[in-house]
Image (cartoon, rainbow, N blue to C red; front, top):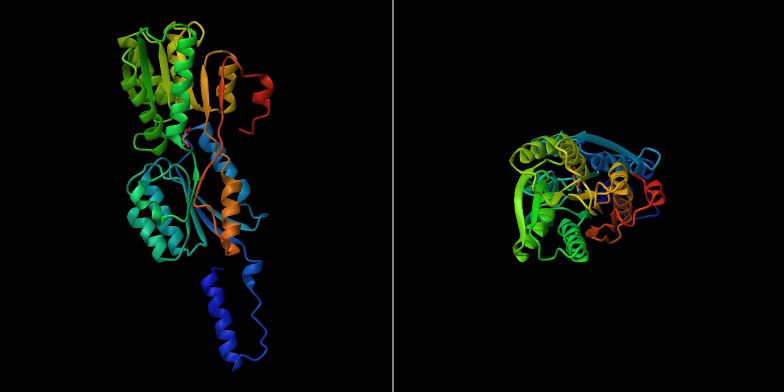
Length: 331
Ligand code: GZL
C-alpha cells in the first residue's frame, strides 16, 4: 500500500475513536499484500535484453513479495507509453521501464508523477531535462563503454606498430536514438576525429539485431573489403557482421585479420572472443533486477535512495579470455 493511503487510514482511525485514546491501529493489509510493479520492457531483440528481462522477473517475483505486470513493447515506444498509462490506471505501486529511446517521455512521466507512482528507469537513459521525473535510474554509462573500446583499439594498434597506418572502420550502430547507441557512437566518432589516420569507411544501423547487422554488413562488403575494424554496438550485431564477413572470405581476428569490437559480453559472443573472432567485448551488465528490488525496499521503508546507479562493468579480449571466465558468467 502507498504510504499516503496508510497514513490516511491511521488518522481516520484516531479521529473515529475520539480524542486520540489508545486505539487499535488498523491491521496494515499492506504488510502481506504484494507490491504491485508495472514493468515496460523494450522488447526481446538480443540475448542481452532476454537476460535483462529474466533478471527483473527473478527479483520481482511472487516469492519475493511482488505482483509483477510485464509488458513487452516489441521495440515500439508507443507501446511503452501505452503500457505506462495502463499501469497508472491500474494504480500500481511502482513503474519500472527501460526507455527504448531518449526522447518523448515527458508527458507520460508527468502523468505518473501526478498519480503519485514512483518510476524506476533501468538500462537506458532519457534526455537530461526529463530525468527529474524519475525516482531512480539503474543502468550503464554507455559513453564510458565506448571509451573503453577506443582505448583498447588504440593500445592494440600501437602494440602492432600501426598507430600511424590508415585504419578503415566500419561502424554498425544500435537502435538509433537509444542511449546505448548515442553513447557508444559518440566515443567512436570522437576518436575518429582525434586520429587523422582513422577513417569511417561505413556507418549503418544494425538495430541491435544479428539479422539486421548481417544485412547491412553484406551490403557494405559489396562496396569494399578494405576494412581494418568493425565496431558493433552489441553482440548480436557482431555475430551478424562476422557471419557476413566470413561468407565474403574475410578473416575476423585481432591478431591478423579484421578487428571486431562488440558490447554486452554475453556468453555466445565470449565464445567467439575465445576463438579469436571477436577482439574485444565490453561488458554491459543486464542483471539489474536485484538493484530494483533494493530500491523498492528502501522506498517502502521510507529510506533515502541512490538516485543514479551505474552498474560495475568489465571487458574481455581475445588475448586474455579463458574458458573458466566464460563458464563463470550468469548470462
Ligand atoms: C544496453 C542495452 C542494449 C544492449 C543491446 O544497456 O540497452 O540494448 O547493448 C540491447 O544488446 O538490445
